[in-house]
Length: 409
Image 1 (cartoon, rainbow, N blue to C red):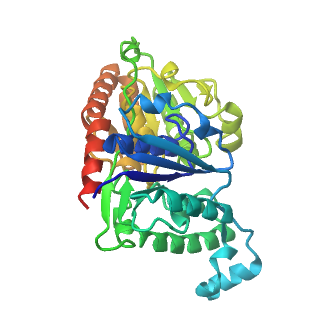
Image 2: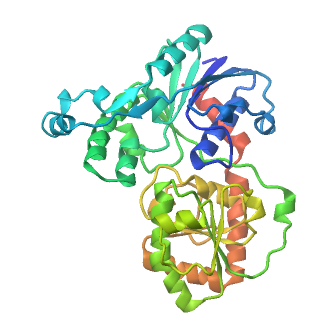
Image 3: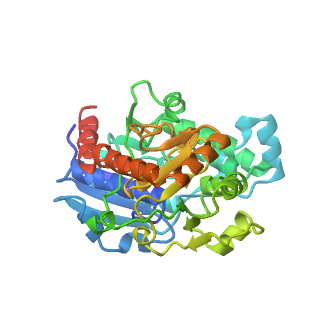
């Protein structure tokens, strides 16, 4: 198929260091621009905070020789919001599932519906690219356009992971039905790993294409890679408090791993990036001794904090849709330790060579001690992880594959 006009729907702000979802979405835009360099790209941004997309495109243009046109259409409203659930709705959902209307669970913005309808009547896109579920929930007025859904997470699962209560249980049941219904309409699904492939396939058409795109980040400056690194033990956790995986993983690490490390080696620094001390005490542990902790907020560029050969921990044990931070850490020339069930489905990584992937707390602690005790092991794994980043996560190669899979199906 020929691609001249692309509609890019997102609720995520543009940027590569704001959050994992925003970075993912921003690089997908870069890939589309490189895959179809002469196309017209219409970015439809749904969010009550519109300032993110009104910034300059210097950063975006630095990644691609895009010669087409980019138009930004900002809808000053979120796509949906949760409706306060009444007891009657809860009771009906338990006994008569089909009788509860979706409007009693969530409210799709009429402003967003009118917004997308008006634009699609003008631009007639060849591709509609939906970042995450919420843009996919909007009624489609795109005619024969190819509908491509980018899967980040199942919202029905995330709701219960964040807070398990009766109201979220009801919402989860109905949002799951919406997810299943939406997936029936798509022609292609973009994922970051294979954890949820089978579940996605069970809800899509038989001829639906599933295409894997790793999370892509540019290399850092040569100045960073030339930076000298001593043998001092620096353990780093990266991520904001708002992410469920970060909160649960950090709690587990502080409860099970740090006490074990203190018995074996007390000469280390634990650097927490993206979480303030107040946030840590309010959400993780207010009683833990933090004398070895260094808290860094969200404002400082990562390359000013991280050094080559640092130890980065990914201590969340649950299955997740995409561990975006792993791809980010590979470019920092780091020794990475994580749980297999969380990041094990990511392709091209070799356990024990360029990353340590373990199944349980006991082995996690064992590998943590191994990295802390041996600077040479940290250095070797860091060099290997950066080599893997350079060889397997190229923006040029991924854009070529994306162009091929879209135009040939």
